[in-house]
Length: 357
Image (cartoon, rainbow, N blue to C red; front, side, top):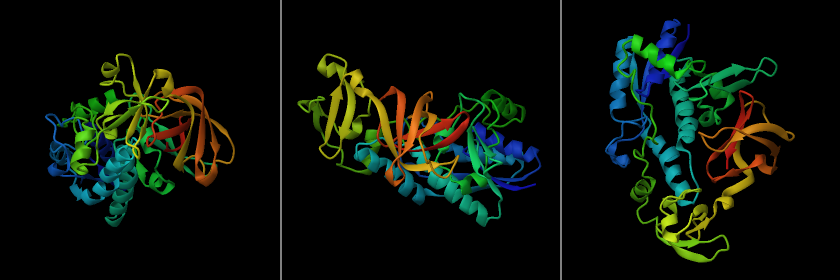
């Protein structure tokens, strides 16, 4: 029997994770993380589809009471503001596209939370993520694998976990389907059995990133020039942070034909527009790489890779570059490769690693 601290978001997944561990005979407690307050976010009419709505602490506490376990609330607001929110804003202002869920996992859920759990005498931290952790018998390394429910697999946002973090982490739902998880919750009478899955970034309910950035960095987003792929000025934009690579909405009408955002330059405050073909890239270079399956990449390796969370894996070759970077050459050109996003490499079911584009 182990002492396990379960990160309970208030959703059905983490609630069932806690129940499964209790049923296995472990000593379990729940914890909900306070990551921001109302004044930190841009309010939306419906913030119920985020992972950190105000009602979530109450839902987690209710489930913990139902399960008969202790429930804590840890205040990580300052760290979250520094490592996640500030980085989100700065990255957008630099003309790149961040992934705050990866940063939250890297710096909050699987770093600070494990540190706090250790101080309280817990052996493991568990979450409701759909992914699996295994141990390589030959090398002794911990391996991250995709969740069995491929429609819910969350391994993409977990690629940054270290060997030390994987050793202290449990994913009880990794081998389960979401349908079965909800049935367990219903049979147990949990209040959140039918609660919708979170969709939006928790601190930007509604997905209005420009308004949030304006609030956090007043005056930083200013109008500038649209350029064509030849560098010629063809119009005015509202500010670089209003646009994402591959975006078409709100642009075509102004030019009378399909136009897409193909590049952003925050230094010059320009947004480059082009045709669909201008969005295609055959290769990229990833930095800030974390490898899980092995310590370092010594030679080119065939993998599948994905450059966004909901993308199907694409056949590719990864090769070592200088300063720990990795080059990715895709068999087929990829659309809308965005700087700042993550590229994650797979070998079968195993996460080889990943990095920042």
